[in-house]
Length: 582
Image 1 (cartoon, rainbow, N blue to C red):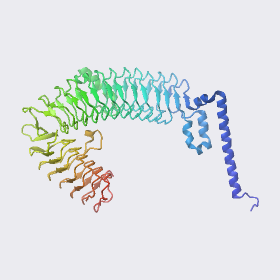
Image 2 (cartoon, helix red, strand yellow; image 1 turned 45 degrees about the horizontal axis):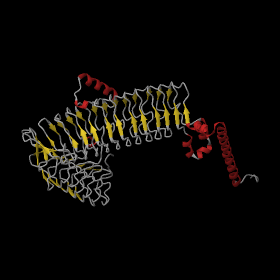
Image 3 (cartoon, helix red, strand yellow; image 1 turned 180 degrees about the vertical axis):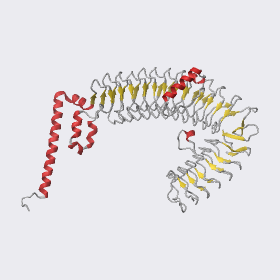
Image 4 (spheres, one colour; image 1 turned 90 degrees about the vertical axis):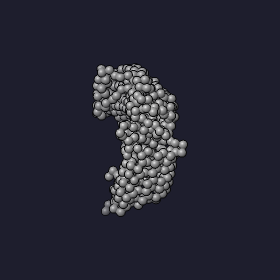
């Protein structure tokens, strides 16, 4: 053995000295670079060099190869072994601002999901911008858009949560699908007079947007275009606008007044209809052509606009479609014109301040739930060919058919409703009792077969329901009806309901059925039930004990979520570990 061999301690000391020397050299190099930069131009020059990227002149296509994340200095620093030991410094080395040169023509997705870029200047020479070009640039605050582009493409600024203001230049004709979706701090939007279409979900979830002016040439506002813009108070719309699509202003909870444009009430000429269809086929490529109708208020256009007080509907409108004004609890000033011939499913459900309305003979169709829970003073002529109104209940009746119960418009003074036996076995329809205040007890006819979707949804005063043994099926909620919400269900929100007995022939308790029944203490589930769906009893905080039947095969993972008083349900023998969705 070599007597002079280094001891382990000496080797450690030598390694430490080498590391220290390496770090010291890197720090000295870095310090010399910084001092040189400061000597040449001072702090402004150093800042510009570190954080401003001027893309070279002559570059035609802007993609990830030219939209580099680091300056040469930043790249050098990022490559140091010292930097690898302090990775938190990397964000401070990234470019913040990009200047695209005149002459560039295409902007690809080189900036997509760049979390450090703060501003981008795009010259007018750029005529084509790719989809998702700035998607999820969460610190992007300022963009100068080119006048050469005719379309702002889909998902262009989606998820740009720091963007506060945007001016869209003249020449742009289309704002495409989800262009600004989720820009939650976008407060100021200036649309150009050249604009013709605002496509689906273009400004969905722009929750800071307070007002918008729609230019005169715009003829279509797409599906969900301004949905969930919860601060939107004012919308200035031209009378030339022809179509406002499904959910366009859904859940704009600050919107107080809306005047529907006169052009919506006019039938399209053959030429206009053909051109509209052609444009929509082009713009909606990928999700298929969706047929449309004129002279109509589309489904769920204003659903959930709880502050909406006044709506002006022009003469000539023929259709008020499903849930068009659902849950507009403040709506008190609205005149339904005599031109209306059809009122869709749950069109005004839960509009508790709806003014008096006469259902004239010109109305050919009223669907289930149209006036449920409105407390509206309805007037129906005795000689109306198929609509009847008795004791707060609205019925549809055709010769040689049993009656259909459409809506519980207002509950009787004692809160007790007995559904007549001449109502058909499948004819107590969707949301017939939904949102009905003061409703305490309901007796259903013995021959009834189904509990329709959302039948008693939001009946907060309902204490007792007798479900006849003839019931074979309970429906949960309908996504189409509720716009994807998960708070609805056949008995969802019946906060006063204390007990329920599931009829013996029912085999499934579907998702959402009894969620938010906060007073529910007792539920009897018969042997024969094989499925209890997701959220079926969610937030039933008073429920203490449930006996699961031996027939159970599928139990949703969230079936009893939020049931804070519930003892853990005992799974029946042989159930195993099957879960809904497995």
